[in-house]
Image 1 (cartoon, one colour):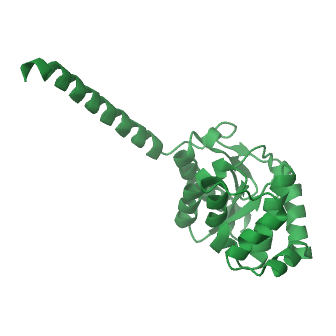
Image 2 (tube, rainbow, N blue to C red; image 1 turned 120 degrees about the vertical axis):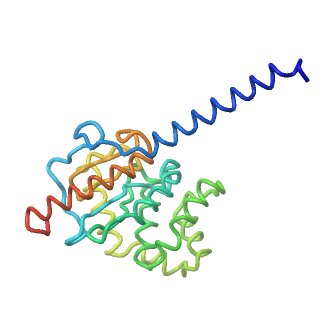
Length: 226
């Protein structure tokens, strides 16, 4: 027993060190991050219009093709759950290439048919967890058919004026926001945040809360609606 004591002591020390390190990391992740313009977030100049009426808009620029967006989704859900009544969360799919355009069209089509909330996580899971080969729009329509959509109606809606208008808005606004990667959070058309600028996903969640309050105060001071 005595000859094994050094090993046991070493193991105990390593365990304590590991637990202490894990606790430090947990506390660091939970710590709020300071809102520093040009460092942890970036002002958008000029500020862009929102689609949230009299509420502060929290907009995630994302793509179903982006694995980082899939990893971020639980944090997006946390942001949504924590938003005050004067704010609302929405998504804007980025269109950086042809493949991303197909996913953006799918998102807006599902939204038009009332299927977006039901199918949002399912699409991430299909692409990044199950590694399904969803490449063409026919593949995409088939996937939504499995989720309960009428495939022919889905394809028809994909070319509708409503969907084309939303795609055009995304193509216009994403560059104006200064977005060059996803996921990116835009607060009320005025502030841009990424996990890199915030220091991680948990810190980003904290920073969203801070900037939502800031944007609300600015709206109130300006008389409400943007």
